[in-house]
Image 1: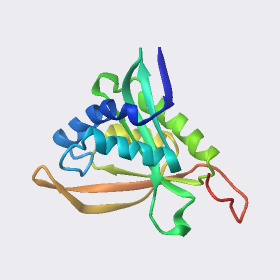
Image 2: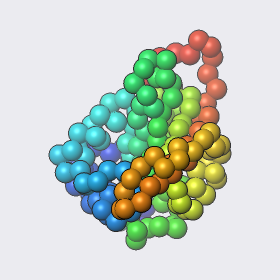
Image 3: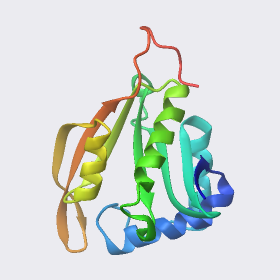
Length: 173
């Protein structure tokens, strides 16, 4: 059975294992060393406290995760968040990323967030298509912004509204 659920620090080992190949074998993320299980547990705990971190389980095994976090640290940005999704290669092209993002956006909306921002290292046709399918609109490209695997990489940024709230908005929960 496939299900999306809220993550906890207990999911850190599984999330770190999913993320490590992205760090070491791709330029999708600009981290150079995979985070430790303790690092991942801290990230999960921090995201859950203010935004959300979800995992996708298939027959009890974590096969993907998605999370939201602050877009920028300055207070006026507090209704916007940056989102990411990572899926095990065994579950690429299965709708796993879509399930995770649908649930993530519901959680972020419930907490009072208005806008989701996503950065995609180019080229990444699968991620570009996923974000476009969710209504993310391009807002700009940082050219040659990251050096990894002996090459410069661009990052395309896009955004989508999460909800329409009254002005002035209530504080995110």
